[in-house]
Image 1 (spheres, rainbow, N blue to C red):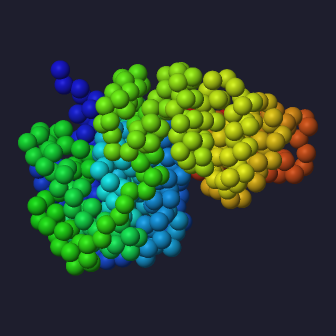
Image 2 (spheres, one colour):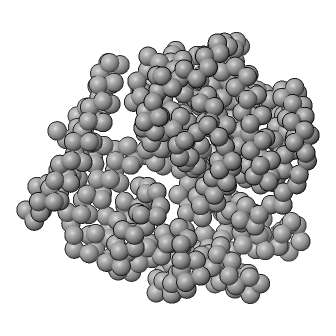
Image 3 (cartoon, rainbow, N blue to C red):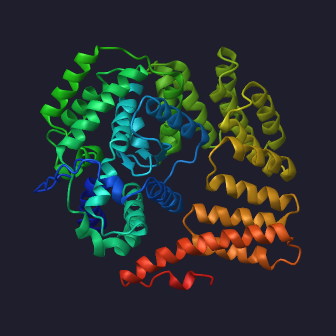
Length: 503
């Protein structure tokens, strides 16, 4: 029986990816080449519009729960991406890198400096340089404004509509069933997205991407190696079963040869995989495992038989799998063995602290986090874990103080505002709790629910003058954005969701 949901989604995403995500175009019967329009995209899409578009897409990804929210994996992926971006030219905005929980091999770039990758990309990579090669390619799509030019090609579409389209793509590639409502909402405009980028866009991203790889010290052969391995693995497969990366970034023999030639001209250089790459890869394997017990058995077999490249990495994955399956005693033994070899490895220390929290030993977990903070005072994964442990222990006032300082040093996200709302509530500040909860819903793309929280705060008898002014100003901002979105729905003849407007 044909899965019509998946078939519909593959056709829909194939059309959309080529234009808005800076790809060469999906595998299709015909490819329409865009004319060389130079840098005129900037005349239609301002940097501020790009930023808003990127933020809207991130909100949709958060809303549908497809993003990996593990602080360690996030920190590693951001660090790798920023390392490459620091060598790029032509983009004055900020880059944001994030992971989507999906076993497919794919990565994409969204106008506004937003770059995402599926967990399957990291899990199926053979080296850190291969992951870096893909990210360098996507960074180059941003710096060359390929995605914005795609938006220009569909310039009749408003920013809210473009964000909805891109958000639907993000949801669909990770969870086709969850994307059906999003597909229906934007299907009427999918004919506007049937233009695909020329191969020149992909060639340009390859060329500049390899230069970034070289400058950042990664293996310059990694891009060609990655392309070639994907092509060989799927040479005799049905094109419908190709990895998403091959459908949105078509690979040819010439493209592989060109990548090798560019690497040759730059000079071959080798890059040893970082331990962070190896440990995050092991952690992701446990996080996304559909059958953790089966993975646990695989780790046990590998450790007994010596079937591993790095024993400590394998033992670390085994400890995480034991923790996920609730075998806390065995997990403690494995982590203790790892710490005996490397007592200041942050990943092992965090695994120990999370283990105690999972086992219900909150006081022990807090002590572990306090020790780790003394070693790594500025580490985001450590801070997030410690704040979460404080909230579990009912120590909201301490958590609130840390969260307020955290906002000065790190980009905030829905998880931050959710913790802040709980901390404010535990600290006896219900109005601030509602304000924080409003930001949580807003960052999830649930603006009507955010407005409801602000209205609750506004009606509270104990609200002071400054809080009221903050609430009113924020309500005006959210209502303006909501009205823009509603206007777009009216233009499409779509009345869904209008009743949710708390006004």
